[in-house]
Length: 258
Image (cartoon, rainbow, N blue to C red):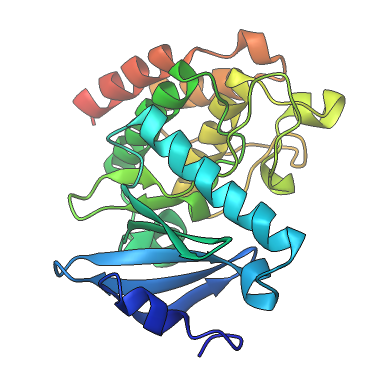
């Protein structure tokens, strides 16, 4: 039983066996195993568990459905696989995603990241962001918690619920990672993702959030090419930041010589 609803029984009917709760927020996130032996993550709107007939349940289910549609529109190698969207107990919808063993946040805390791995992960995520931009969206909430590491050792975006069109206020954004344009105009643009990617690289290297909006000094990485790239990505004027294609090329160049 989960908050009075036996979701486990309902999911077993469709070949999904729940194992444990991973997190509780807007969604209840559960680790599960599928009938084919694969591990998965199941997202259940918490509002549906509280009251399946509520407006909040319908809205939570709509958000999961929208995220599922985003994933199939973008189809990026560096976005976690979205396996299925289930009509479990109408109007409740349940989203099933690929399970990843660890997040970038986990690896930062465990101090398991070397320089070349951080740059490689940054390249993976830059490619995912480029795919998202081509679909007409800004990611808007890039941070270590939203980045997983798959079984191939590649960094992947784990969630797409923060996607928003450019020049709009995002559905969700984390204050520590906000770009200057959000603070100034309450909007994000494509270049906002470039800014947040630079913050993520710095945090991966130093285990510190070094947003120039809130800290006086940004530490140097010891690699001049990367320092120059990060400084340009953190420009306070969004349209003076490099395009994602250029960021990918620069990261590839740094990897070649690291």
